[in-house]
Every structure is written in C-alpha cells, then in structure tokens.
Image 1 (cartoon, one colour):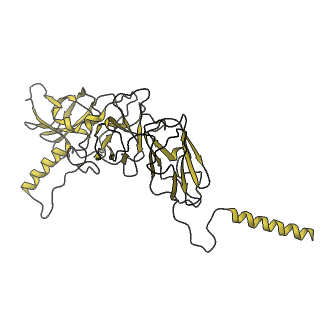
Image 2 (cartoon, one colour):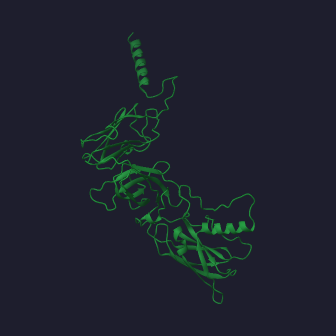
Image 3 (cartoon, rainbow, N blue to C red):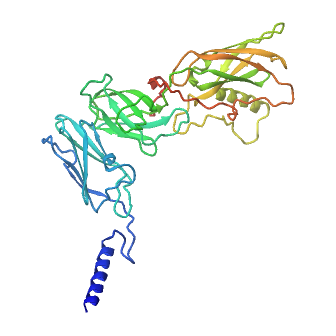
Amino acid sequence: MIARAGALAALLLAAALGCARPGNPRGGVPDRRPPDVIETEPAPKATVADADAVVRFRFNERVSERPSRGTIDDAVMVSPRTGTLLVEHGSDWISVRMEGGMRPGIVYRVTLLPVISDLFGNTMRDPFELVFTTGGRLLENAVAGQALDRLTGRPIPDLLVQLLPPTAQPDTLAYAARTDDAGLYFFRYVPPGQYSLVAFQDRNRNQALGPREAFGRRGVFVQETADTLLIDVVVLEPDSTGAVLTRVEPVDSTALRLTFSDYVDPELTGAVAVTLTAPEGRPARRVTEVLHPTAYEARRDTARARTNPPPGSALAVPGQERLGLPVGVPLPRMDVVALLDAPLEIGASYRVTARGVVNVNGIPLGGGDTTVVRPPPGRPPATPGDSASAPPAVPDSARARADTAALALRPRR
C-alpha cells in the first residue's frame, strides 16, 4: 500500500512538473504572437516630478529574461542618457531607472528594442517608445535619416546614432538612437539648437566613439518649428594614410588604369595629376584628363552606342548602382583612368607619376610612381571594371577620426 502511494505521488509530481514547463497545450493553437506593451509608467507625454521615478513597461503575457540578442540591459535605450541604467525584469514587466535620478527640464525618450521575447520564443517585431518630460517642452518634431556604407551604398543596421552639441561639455546631453535593419534612425521631440550627428559602430558598447570604430558625422540645426528633418549620413572606417599608387595597366592604346592602395575620393578624381615620362629618344605622352572609372565607362559605352546602338536596349553604367545613396557622385573606387593625347608605343616602358590623390577619408598627398608597358597585339588589355586584380584596401592601424562631413551627400527630400 505504501509502495502504491509512493508511486502515485511520483506520478502526480511528474505531471505537475510537466504542466509547469512553458509550452503550447497539446492540441491547442500554437502561440505565435509576440508580446505587446499594454501599460506604461509614467503614461505617454506625462510630466514627471519625481527624479527617482521608475519607468515600467507591462506586457500582455509573461516575457523571458533572455532577449533574442544581447542582455536585458541592452534591451532598453534612454535618450538623453543622464546616468547609468539599472534594468530589472519581472514576470510580465521590465523596468528601468537611472543612477542619480532624472534631470529636471528634460524630455526623455525610453525605447524598448525589438529583442524582448515571450516564453515561446516570439520576439517583438518593432521597437516601443515612451516619451515623457521632467519639465522640458514637448516640441512635435523629428530628425530622421539613413546610415549608409560610403564604399558600397548599402544601409548599415545596429549603429549607435547620437545628437551632440558641437562643443562637448562635462555635462553634455547625448540624444541616442539605433539604426534598424534598413539603416534607418529617428529622433523625436528634439530641443532646438545646433548639433553634431554622429553614427558609429559601438563595438565595445561603451556609448562613445572609439578611435577604431567606423563612423560618419553631419552637422544638424533643429529649428523652433514642428517639422521633420531628413539627414542621411555616410559611414567609413577611420584612416590616417594617403592612397599609394600600386600599379598601372593599359586599358587601350590611349588610356591607363592607375590602381591605388585605398579608395579615392570620387569627387576629387579630376584633381589627380598624372604625368608620363617616355624612354630616352621616344616621344612624350601627355595626360589630357583623369576620370573616375564609371565616368570613363559611361563615355566609352555612349560612343559605342552611337556607332552601333543595340536594338531595344538602354545604356547601363557599371558601378553606378548606388542602392540607398542618391544618384550623383559615384561610389568610391581604388582606381582612376588617365586619358592620353596619343597612343603608347608597343613595348616601350613609360614612367607614370601620380600626385594630389585624396582618399575617401579626405586624407591628401597620396600618389606615387611606377612603370607601364603596352603589351603587343593579341594580349587583352586590362579593363577598369576588372576588380579581380585590384589589391584589397589595407586597414590602417594608426586610426584617426577623420571628419566625414565633407563626404556626406545632400539629404533626401
């Protein structure tokens, strides 16, 4: 009898433990809905007088203490951040407070990032934002835009974007946001004034731009109007050395491709000075123009189309697909094309010198010299679009914070 009672108790305990495990009931409809925020403390756009107030998000179901990525501390952003964040997790709530309390006269924006999951692994699809004030004016404005890779034109996700005063002070307020999967960021209720907008890869998660972190910078002026300001920012790895000439190859008898160790600023390609020195007793060749490869290819294709236009097809310009960047200035390349006033002699060795090269980070004084020989007929010439033989960009260990404001393109309208 005792053995039978013990077995029955063991079965009941096992059944209870089985029911305690999170999971969908057998035969029931699987839960595929992400958790929703149903209540906040304080309420949206409320005025908070208590500096030590706790911000709380309550959900419609139990949520996991393990976000889909990162830690629970990384799941909440406070802008501006005026102290160390203390994040706590409950069964159906998440709370955050700041060490030292909140400052008076500030509009705070607290964002739950889309990393919060329920017990069935369903993750929030979109961020949830709570805005309240400790006395600051709620100006219905926005600063928004897209962060783009300057070399590829592709949007960059998960960048930290900050709005900072032009001159940092010990008590500087940093308004912060993160880019989403499409590289988009936005700020709301921004106080009027002049700002420096910085987007960077916060690799060490210390909320500050490091000397080896890719970044972009723009100047922003927020007016006393309820308006939306669209500002795109281009992002680059920092660099401190100029572009060095590494190779010269004939494209055809009157054009040379010059390849460098770094990406060349496409807006300053025409300022590159290229000269040729002919062997003794041979006629000199003069460079008439230096072009970005995209411009050279467009000119070449246009000439070919005029001579023999393909039926029913439009001209395509290789290398001009800019994805998120507006059409205008082409994407950077590691090569330029120099046009000559006369054909090179076959088999003759010419000394090629390049000066005044500015890389895509704005580092000047690049260039160098090397030799080139035009091959005999039958050997196909190199083409500017052939990147297989081009050396990869060499990362520089001596990083400098080059200001990319000069590289930023006009904001979208």
